[in-house]
Length: 314
Image 1 (cartoon, rainbow, N blue to C red):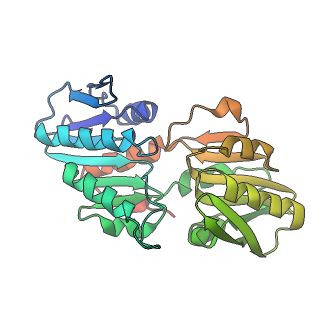
Image 2 (cartoon, rainbow, N blue to C red):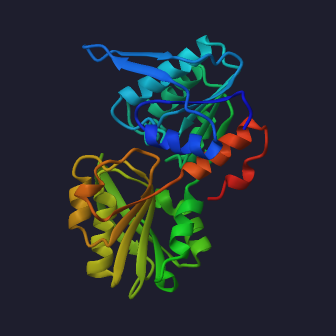
C-alpha cells in the first residue's frame, strides 16, 4: 500500500479500523485518547505523520463525543503537517436535519459539514447518507459509498429469494429501495406514513402487493425501530406477507429499538457494522454484515489516486 498511508482510529469503532488495516496490510497508527475527570477529551497522535496520506476513521453516531473526537483528530493531524487528511465517516450523524423545515431550527447537517472542513479534512468518505444532497454541503471532495453490494450479496444467496418482495417504509426511502429491488429481481411496494413528531410514525396507506411474499423492508437506518416494526405489523396482519425481514445499513438502535424488534413479527434484522454494536446478545434477531472490505477498497483507491466510481453501486 505504500509507506505514506496512515490509518488513525477514534474510540467509537476501533474494531472496524483494525479490520480495515488488516485488509490494507498497514499498522494502525498509535493514538492516545483520554478523558479528563470533567469529560474533556485529550488526545495525541504518537507517531510522525508529516507528509503522510492520513485516513481518520470515526462514525459520528451519538453520543456527541464522537463528532468532537473526530474534529480533534482532524485538527491534530492538520497541525502535525499531514499531506492529505480524509475523514472516513461510515455513519454521518445529523444527516436527518438537512433542511429548515420549521421556523427557528438549525440545518445541522450543514453545520457538521462546516465543522469537519474547518477542522482540517481535505476529503470525506462516507456511506449511505440519509439525504444524498448532503454531498453538496461540503466544499471539499466527498465520496459517497453504498452498502447495497454487501447487502445484495447476502440476499442473492437466500433460499427464499424467488419469493422476495421489497418494501420502502416511507417515501424518502423509495429510490434506494427501488434500486435494491431491481438488483434483487423483486417487486417494490411502498408504505405511506405520517410523522406527527420526531421518532413517531403512523401508517396511512400501502401501495403494492406482498401477499404470500417473503418481504424485506429496506431503509438506510434503524433508529428507534418504530417505523420498520410498525410496517412489519401492517404487512403481516393486513397485507398477507408470510415473513418479514428488516434490512438497513446503519444500526443506530436507540431507545426501545431492540425491544420493538424482538416483539415485532420480524424473522431477522440485517444491518452492517458502520456503527459499533455490542448489544446483539439482547436481540438474537440482529445479523451484522461486515462493510470493512468495501471501505478498505475505497481507501486504497483514494490513496493510489485511482477511480472509485465502480464502488458507487446503489
